[in-house]
Length: 232
Image (cartoon, rainbow, N blue to C red; front, side, top):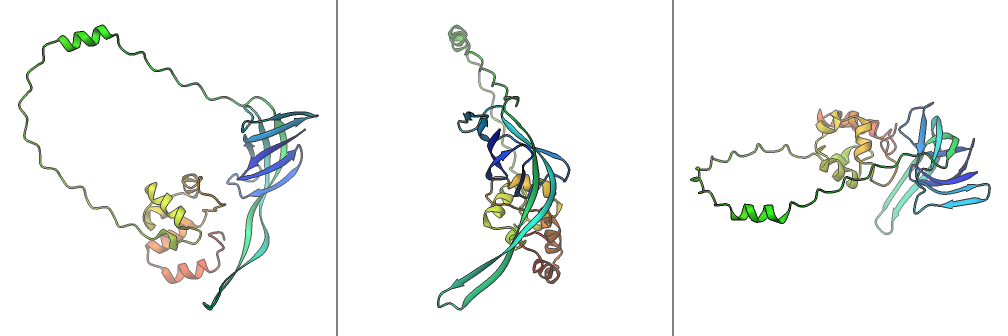
């Protein structure tokens, strides 16, 4: 029996007891994780295809360890500009082992409650026929208090691992300054940017933001030179 399932943004063909290397997961080592986006199941020749996924199907796995892949050299060059940039990249990975493939059993979402029926037309007509009360004299409007000016947003792209899309997503979620980012937890940040494409490790972002908020730019720059896309 095998399944085609989405894991950490990638699709894999997996079977029981198979080891798989996926993009870094936030789950701790030794704990179990479930993937419910199953697109195809093959049970001894009996094939089931989802539309797009199969209801109730899931792949259960156990996190073995977190590791990093082989180094890949990334070289950028612009013609006639004298621009050359060479970087190394090592992808953060998680090794998991498939423990079981569940064909049925996932809980379905409860159906939404039906809207209440409209009130009878007779009651509407009765309300319309009722005499209108005289309008109370208007009170003078109280002076409008101006809201306090919001703190100026910081350039979050100065944090290693944060690009324009992630920066705008964090600002929309209320994290607009280095001080806000320093107070946020990595797990919460990962939840906010879950819809942004790519594999983002947020472990060092609050610490970087704290140094930026305190104006320790030299120390931050030295540390960022040792980081790779926000990863230690």
